[in-house]
Length: 567
Image 1 (tube, rainbow, N blue to C red):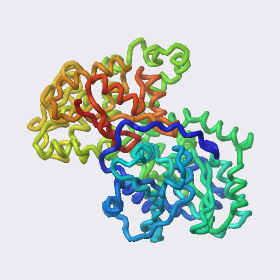
Image 2 (image 1 turned 180 degrees about the horizontal axis):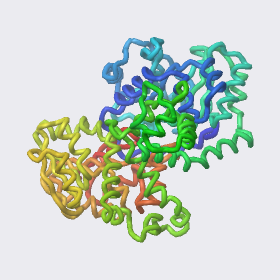
Image 3 (image 1 turned 120 degrees about the vertical axis):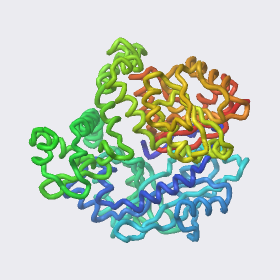
Image 4 (image 1 turned 180 degrees about the vertical axis):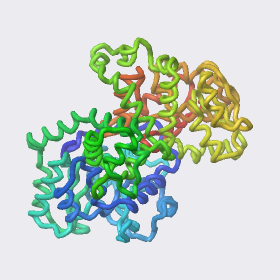
C-alpha cells in the first residue's frame, strides 16, 4: 500500500450485514488486547525482528490498543455491543479527524457528512497495565444513505490496527523507530496530527502473522515534521529487495511448518517448559543439528521461542498439536503436501487456464483423494480443522429461529459433519440432515447423533426436501458459475418457501484490500478449478436460481455467512 489511497471505487453491497458483527469484533479485539505484550507481539507483526533490534523497539514502544470500526444504529445499540463484549460504556468520545478524512476519501464523501467518533474503553493487560480498545464509531440508522459505506467497512475493516505508544518521543527517536520498522518490511500507510488530543499518528502496513495488517505509532505531542517525512516516504531499493526476498521464501515457511507438524514436534513440546534440541530430536527421531536449524527458523516466525538452552512452544505453535481443540495440523500437512506439489505447476494454470492439480495427477482432487484412503482422511481432517469458522453460525438468526421451532438443518455436502455437529450441540432441539458421498457418510455417523440426524447418500441433485435451514459451507468455491447455478437450483427446489439458505465462503473484497479470500482464490485456481467470488457475484448467482441475498455476517478465519431466501 502507498501513502495515498486509490480513488474511490467502492460499490454498494446488495445487502446489509446481519448477525452480531460489531459485538463479535469488539469482543475479539478486547480479548486480543488483554493477552498481548509488545515484546511478544512485535516479532509476529514483523517476522525476522529479533535480538537487539527487538529489544530496542520494545523498550521505546508500549502496546497501547487494538482498533476496530463499528457502525451501530444508535447509541443504545453501541452501549449494548460494548456491554456484550465486556467493555465499559461510560467513556467519553472525541472526533476522529484522521479516520473521518480517510473514510471520506475512500468513499468520495464530504468529511463534514461523517461524524466519526473515537471512544477508548479500557482493559487490563497480562502485566496489570491499563490498555484500551480504540473504537471508531459512526452511527448508521436503518435506511441511512451510509448503509452501503457501513457494509463495506465492516467487511474490509480498513481501520483495524494495533497501536504502540512511543515512550519519550523526540525527532531522533521517531526517525530511528520508523527506520527500524521499514527495515523489517513495514510500509508507510498514512497518518496525521489530531489537534483535539495533541497527538501524532504514523500508520504502517506490516507483513504480519496476526489478523492485523496495520500498525500505528502514536507519539504524544505535535510531531508534524516527522509526519511529513513519513507521508513522503518511499521504500529504498535495499528495503524493497529485503521485503521481496522475504516474500520469495514463503515456500520455505510452508515446508518448515509442514515438517514441524509431520514429525509431531509440537506434540513433544510444552508451552511452559523449554526442551533441549537433543531431547526433542530423540523424541521425534530427527537429526539434532538439522532440527535446531528448523527450530531457529520457526522461532523467527513466533511458532516456538528460545528459552535458555532449549525451545518452548508458543500459543501460535500449539495450534499444530494433534490434540489441540482447534488443531491446524491437518492443514499444515495438506498445504505442505498434496497441494504444495501441485502449486509447483501454477505456471501451467496461468498459461492455459487448466487446473494444476489435474495436470499433475491426471484427475481432479476429489477423484484423486477418493482413491487413496490416507489422502481422503487427511482431506476430511483438513476441512474439519477450520471448524472455528463455523462457531458463530450457532447464533445466526436463521439457526436460532429454526431451533426455537424444533426445525431441521440440512447440510449439503457437509463432510464428516463438523459444522452440523456444532449446531446440534448448541441447540439440542434442532434436527439435522447430512447429504454426502458413501465413504464420508460412514465417518460422519461416528460424529453425529443418530437420534437427531438423518443421513442421505447422493449428489447435489439429491438435496433432501422439507428442511428449515439449508447450508452450503465451502462448496460453491469449488465450482465454476454454471455448476454453482445447478447446485443453487437443486437447493432452491428442495427448500420450502419459509426456508433459509446459509452459504459459508471467503468473499473477495471489491476494492483490492488484503484478504484471505484473495489467497484462497489463487489456491482454488491452482488446485481445485474453482474460485472465490465477490458479494455482487454471489448475488447474481443467487438471483439466477430464484433466491435473494438478504444479509452478510462475518465469520472467523476470513469467512462470511451469506444469508439467502426464496423470492
